[in-house]
Image (cartoon, rainbow, N blue to C red; front, side, top):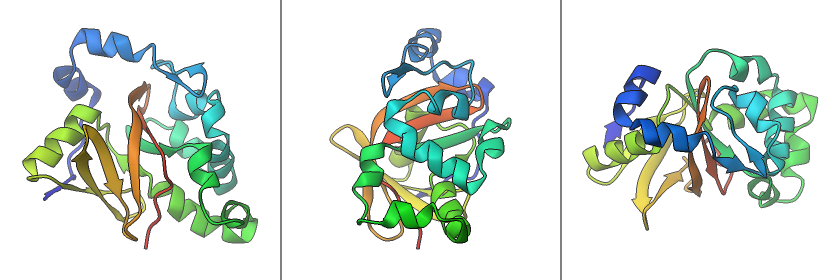
Length: 185
């Protein structure tokens, strides 16, 4: 298994992707809104109708300034449907001020230092002979595998999320939309 510890800079990203691929990413639509590579993670996320719960959680955790920072960050962004699939009351409980530390831990478990596009993640999986261990900003680990041509992330509790939209390039990183909320230990 490969452990992610290096950063892929924007210069490295350009080497991995062709100019046509980068240009095509500018037209990525998420939640009915164009995701512009000139905007940061927060400025794009607030426009996605599919990520209102994530944006509310990021605000409640006080992570807006961090995710507007220079990064680069790779964010595995759960949709509203992913949050809705959690047990009843989970999101409301996490958004309470007294649970800010727990919420922060859950959110930073979806963030990886560096800019990891889908090609780089797939290469790590290949290099790891079918799986790659990815360290998150929270200090936890995600396991990445390929299934049916898609990247599947497994959390430390055994829950799995599939990347449904990859390579949403931001000025300070990249977002990969996922269909489940990943949970740390």
